[in-house]
Every structure is written in C-alpha cells, then in structure tokens.
Length: 233
Image (cartoon, rainbow, N blue to C red; front, side, top):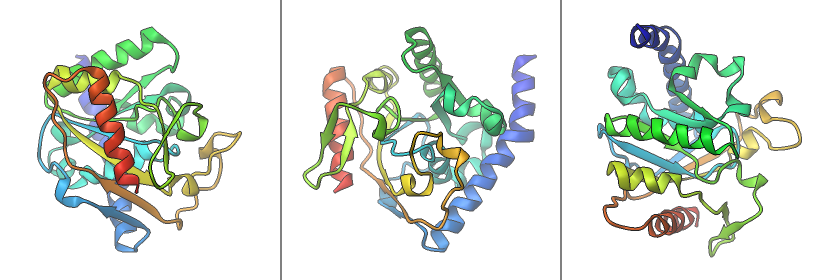
C-alpha cells in the first residue's frame, strides 16, 4: 500500500515539479544564464549513478536535477534523481512537492546520517540516480578547506559517499558548480527567504565518470576531491 501511495504522490507532485525544474534549467541554458561544460562526460541513460558535487548554496540540489531532465521526462520512476539533503533546509512546506525524491537527514545526528546512507545504498543498488554533497553543508559554513591551484575551495569531504561508491559499484560523476551563491546568496538568514537573482550566471562542469572497486575509502575521497578541484580551475 505504501508503494502505491508513494507512486501516486510522485506522479501528482514530484514529477510535475521535476518537469518544471527541467524546463527552467534548459531555458536558462538557452538564454545563456547557465553554462554546462563537459556534456561528453554525462552518463546518459545509465543506471546506478552517484553524482558528487560541491555545495556553494542551497540551489544545487534543485538545479542539478535539470541535468537528467531528458531521462526522467520519459522514464520518471527509473531516472528521476534522488537528493540527500539537510532536513532543516529542505524539510519544510516549500519542498513538499519534491519530498518523494528527498532523503532528509539531520547533520550531526549519526543515526539519521547512517539511516540516510542505507537508504541511498538501496536506491543505487536498485539502479537509481543519487545526488550527494559530501561537504556536509554549504561550503561557506566550513572550517577545514582544500584549495585548488587557482584558489577555489571546498570543504573536506565526508567519507559516506565513498562507502556508497565502493559498496554499490556506482558510476561516480564529479561536478563543480559555481555562481549559485550569487543566485541564492548565503547569509545569516536561510537563502530561500531572499529573492533569488535568477539573472546571475551559473557554471556547471561535469568531470569524467569514475569507477571504484577495491580502493580504500580514503583513496576514493581524495580522488574525488582532487577531480572536483581540477574541474574548478
């Protein structure tokens, strides 16, 4: 019964929301507001994909869904991406339409984080697409950073995504996003209470897909961190 209810909620609310995001995303590309580089690296129509991105603002869990628009438009149940997101930011009424594709976790709550990773693992093993932000929050809120040669920064990644990669055999797609913090400015107040500056430029860079088998979690973490910082420059 729960599966039927979830499917109805998805078709009535989440899918239309995703279509709106997808159309808006491609419209922004057509207008030159959003630039996407590295389309040749996009794992089109592949199952079991783990998208790993930096997290400069609250916009990334929304905008990155647009990358998969052509897939989930035709096959929504199979290719509609899942997001692992922080409950305090995405657990309100504003994001209710997307709730059936959100794994909400409480940062710092080990039980909540572990439960979220288990669910993400099950989704990947069933062939799903998962978007995750292993900085553990927005970049601006971090304390321990890694920097590229060009001066771009990310917070040190948490190792949960590495465990997902090695235990599921998922294709890891590293992504660098910049400019979203100008669309949804960070500050003392949560960004979605500010008027979004949709005219600001956003750049998304897709890296080469990575596959891991026997590497340690630390090796995976460092490899993906390096890949994303290389994209940044």
